[in-house]
Image (cartoon, rainbow, N blue to C red; front, side):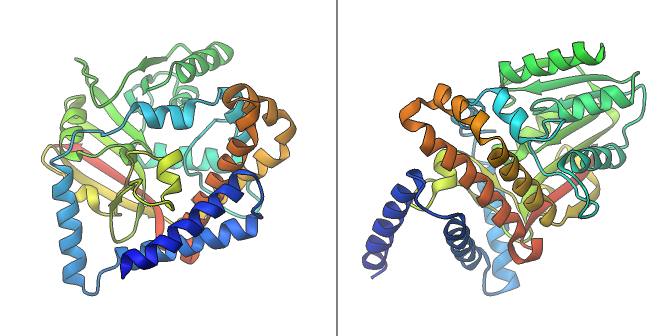
Length: 355
């Protein structure tokens, strides 16, 4: 019976995706469809009892122990970084922070919200001048550069997975006359080094990983005895799941988050073999929703400049489709984190010490 129901559903989704890529679906329809998919995800994620909810979470945590650190590395890199940095400069804020920001009030701009979240990291990670800091999965260097400007005596090492990101960070260092930042391009799942740091930070990288036990063991090897590890990852408040491309409606997985993980808010608490939790915070999802709405607004405001970038990256025949895909991605992120007033999907912050 389920297969009989699923067949026309899959056909409907396929037809709607065909309309989407031709830019024939209004944003209102895209948002409503996204909310329907999110409601379905909640129905499958929530269990009928607290005992079953915990059992499912523990089963998920144990399943990660059987996986490599990451199941996909090249495909996600292409999905997000195939576009040149010029695109992200038009869409993100001044720091090129490609992760949740923090809006203290409605008058905040995206630039304000970037700074406010970066300052929150400094406070929660207990960053102090003179420390050695490792930024794992540093992106375009938003946090590395923020620390470098604020604390001139800190020495920051950033690990990113893109040569274009490294080039951007090094260019910004020259412009800002900063000499306390060094960047390594590496696949974190395979990378090894003989070095230790006072602080290790990781902003929205754990969602691309699987085996947290092995990952945290690796990271603990880069921590001094009194070092602290600060982790920011998005999450669902109660359950965890893998991003899998199985059905036609697994659109986000297919085009933007292959091999990804949605942790629960407490998932990392089950991986304390090599680190011990010191503190744990949650950030309401509305902040991420507003962040993505701002990205969408900037993309629309700069559409005439962005069009040639899309054409040069994806080809003229595919430019409209990929423009729509990126807009839809930002809409989906906004709807995800804004769902139920930001009380379902949100951001978790952890502070760990070395065991």
